[in-house]
Figure 1 (cartoon, helix red, strand yellow):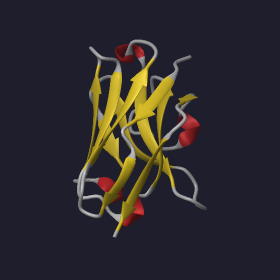
Figure 2 (tube, one colour):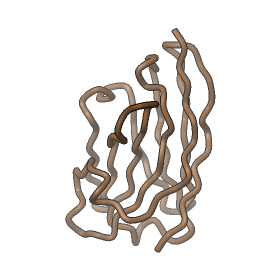
Figure 3 (cartoon, one colour):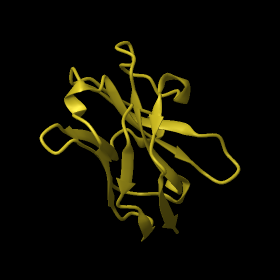
Figure 4 (cartoon, helix red, strand yellow):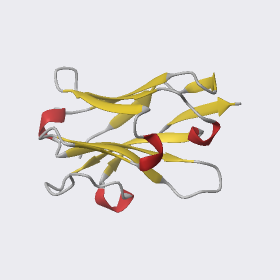
Amino acid sequence: QVQLVESGGGSVQAGESLRLSCAASRATYAIFCMAWFRQAPGKEREGVANSHNDGRVAYTDSVKGRFTISKDNAKNTLDLQMNSLKPEDTGMYFCAASRSPWCAGALSDTEFDDWGQGTQVTVSS
């Protein structure tokens, strides 16, 4: 099991950027996949980006070209750089970790075992 703590959320205008960070309680190189999810009010949680420890990354279509997921194994952190933010990016953003070695590309929350408490991102037009 790994404890995850997110930070970096806030309120911005459309077109601006935010960088989220997730601190893990143990070595991130030993975690098969780490990912970012988000949940808007009244909507289901959706996968945003996934980073496998072999270097493979995956993004949901709506954020491709705008968001970048990166992992720093020296600091045991997972970041999400979000550029050109849109109002539809608003939501609670969660960091998650998977214990499955076959998690590469997974953006379904059923594939992930450990979750952070979330950080709020609000984008106004």
